[in-house]
Image 1 (cartoon, rainbow, N blue to C red):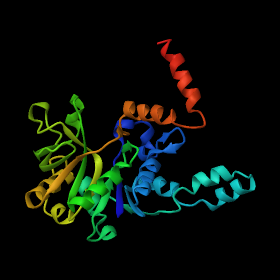
Image 2 (cartoon, rainbow, N blue to C red):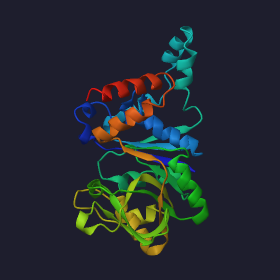
Image 3 (cartoon, rainbow, N blue to C red):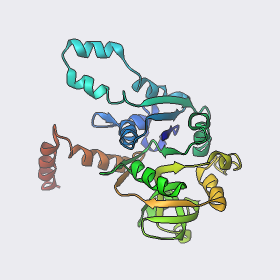
Image 4 (cartoon, rainbow, N blue to C red):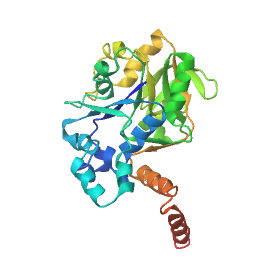
Amino acid sequence: MKAVIPCGGLGTRFLPITKSIPKELLPIVDVPVLSYIINESINSGVTEVLIVINPKKQIIKDYFSRDDELYEKLHKLGKADLIEQLNLFNNIDIRFIEQKSPLGLAHAVYLAKEFVGNEPFCLLLGDDLTISETPVTKQLIDLFYQTSSTIIGVQRCDNDDIVKYGVADVIDYNGKFSRIKGIIEKPPISKLPSRLACFGRYILKDIFRYIKNIGMANNGEYLLTDALGKQCLDSSVFAYEFEGSRYDMGDKLSSLKAAIELSLLRKDFGKELKKYIKELATRI
């Protein structure tokens, strides 16, 4: 199965750094967020990825391009460990397409039509990081092969942050796996259809014909939630409560939490960091 990763957003919540560095390349210590997302794709069995970028994000394309001069210098210095780190993406075909105007997520997805053809595909949002024992995309792919239907990754959100996301309108709630009749985009607390927020992971099937038939929203964008709502009228669409931790990497506090939690898992300095955090906790 192929994957599409939209990275067209402006990253306004992370200004000023995103004035020149895309939020998808902001590092968790020394590894960009987007690298984690592509690794999730690889570990889910994906072999081809299309990254949708805006014209100001060519640096993303540069990052994933081979730098022969750098390889040669590292080879001469005997830095085999660093060369190995740079070779992580040799087993996946990464392509790029530009979204020249900021016309929304549905428009970005539609740009992938030629890339994916008529096949179902994975959609991973470029500012949503998920960490789990079984990759979240793999969880959704496994479910897709049981249902042959569009699958939307959700998690329960019991705080007021839920108004920032699309929220699943559930018909048949069955634990982790539910059929839905639509997605309400950023509903007020008083009109929540459920507590299941859509968190940046999808398996999409036959979505392009629905995107073609939606209009532009009041914010000047084409919303994927509108297309999914139309698809719900014609066929079964399911929400799956995936297992794992999810971080909104466009949010500064959430990004910091991800950096701390992932750094604690590192073999090179994780133990020292844990010791430092314990010491720091006694002083604050």
